[in-house]
Image (cartoon, rainbow, N blue to C red; front, side, top):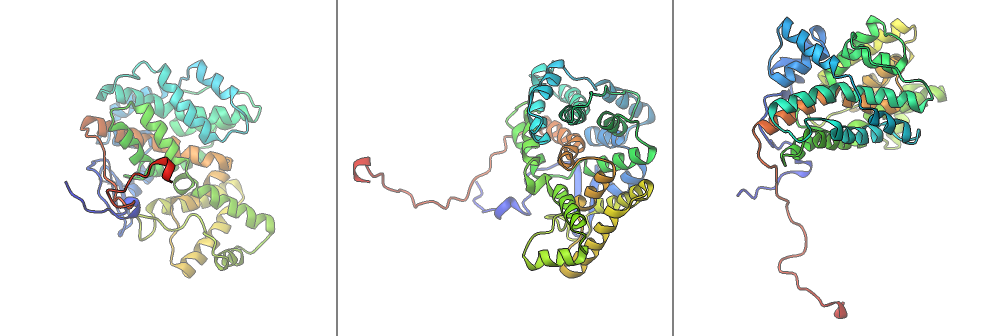
Length: 377
């Protein structure tokens, strides 16, 4: 057995084999099943990318139509889930509610105890369809609004915006949100995906793995950077401050600027390239580019001053805000997208499983440490 000690945070450690996602951090490359994220963002849809992640290849037109039909048909929630959403405090954090609701979903899933490949795929359809419904319904319930029924004729992106806002979204808004979902769909062994695979490796069911993944995503070091970015933009706007001077003072106070730098990428995060453009286009379409303009000024200064690149979170903040989405829904929206990647990894783990059980580098008292009877302590 190897006794090599991994670096803190397992940085640079290869923990498993996977055919789902490939990243080249030095070149700024992200690909799903070998297909570059730039091509997918420009040419594909979230439904097609999800098929690609789950089945390992792009679908034919007939296969995509059938996949879309199954995904939209899965837009159903057991009434007990809606009861839960109505019963929790309206002040509850949406990520808390999502984590609890996904766990409850397993009780009402006919395939809950079946971890076979086909059952995992069936459950993946349902989870991918149900998670955005939970997020949208709870947001309306907490605001005292009537809940909106799913429209099975809409795309995945359009249906979420419809259920959230009660208005059919524009083509521009739908496409922007669809691209955002594509960009966040998978990212190799990030913290939540690794958590999902560790849980799945015990042969726990997919709902347990996804609940664990949502718990990992809830942590601010994983899922909260775009929330922090938007709060920064709000603070600058409220103060009427010059964004460069404001950020310069934050640096002087040794405060972190969220949305910059990445553990993996040493050049621009390829997802940020598209979100920057989307933020600008949505702002222009809405007749208000304020958030994009502030973001761009900050990005240019941080790049010049600290040589740090914007990551996926930086421009997703202004993109989601321009779409009318509340800050505390940013991380749940991450989950709405990432469920496609989480599901792919759980399926892959169960298809060729081995329990994930690393060792720890022990730093405690030397063995054998004496036991001191209680009367002598």
